[in-house]
Length: 157
Image (cartoon, rainbow, N blue to C red; front, side, top):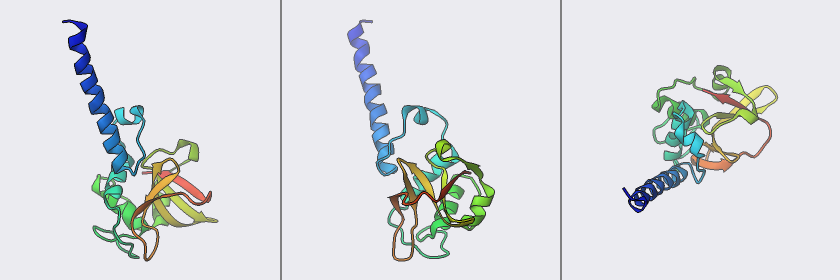
């Protein structure tokens, strides 16, 4: 086999890999995972974030757990349940159940808990690049948004 006959197949594989990365970026709101993250077996969180991203634009409703309306912990509960991982109902209960991790250990798909003192009042799913998928508040919709405060803790389901 000549080297010229091998090259087109290699380029074809490269195009498929780039296309997959771009498609993943579109699903995750423009955050493309590293090749190392793509090669690893997806975690519950990595799968759950795709579920949350697919709910983009769904209206916020206090106490709602989907499939068409969500509050913050309802979105995380729904997203993880769809991929086979059980979470409790409220943000505080979810924080109490998950494994706590540092900001330096956070990965795409980890939970981001917003707190005031020891009280957890909001939760979202980390999308990378300092952003989360979440259901923010009454009058808003599920969306990708930059983390707006340093008063956050991280957890892994």
